[in-house]
Length: 359
Image (cartoon, rainbow, N blue to C red; front, side, top):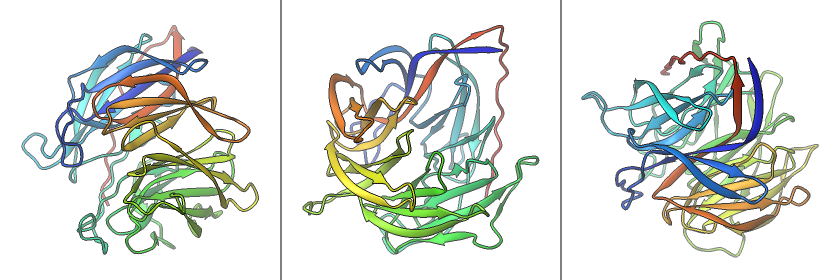
């Protein structure tokens, strides 16, 4: 198989039905755009409307398959969500492959290890009873090596650490440190890794902070310092959502819903610690998700409650964001994936199966 990369696809998941936290949602499912990184322009090329509430989408490493979680209360008469898989055509069309139940309750996130998708459920509670009555794992991410899984659990203020057997796809809790306990009421939401240094960062939804970790030789996390994702002068209500690191490893970004901004930090290459740089208004309301293109040129922000995606240029020397003239109007965008647009020759496709894991 030969692969040539030319331009970019952007896959967007939307809420298709009203939610308690998004009462005006009327999204069209999964929309696919072409991204011109020289201008920031997004051009719609296809959409798939035969899916309900694809609140998180993930593309495979070869950009040939897309997986989407449906954030629904019931599937096949049971109280659970589901996961759908699609084959991505050269023009961005999505060909439905299969759909399986996501056992364990409502799902809102997925990650992929090669051709496998892991869904994890935990039990517990935290001090914020409005959001922490029980376990609420908001994401699950694989280590760079692929043999560890980390699960930020908003409901228990923990980051669970699990070992993955890559041969059997079995998961088990770390023997030495099964979880890292964060500050009470912090609400860990998403976690990301430095692209080439032994550091990880977790954005905490409820107290609007970012927790730094050092990754040990055993791949377990050791918390270091915590930083506010909001400017000191801000006294209003806000919650954090998404977190990403620039491909050059120098800049970390986090989104604030309420303050409606993207916070920018500089990453110290020796210690992994953060330095506040500035914030940039998201261009809309409730920036639930954002994404950086693989070249580090463009940052896209999905503003859930203003029904738009805004395009920003990234200064690769300072990390600063400059809003472009381009933005896209669509209802309730909540998940973004930017990938190289592949052109394949002499390639055969096979659908990917699902592996489901419960704690």
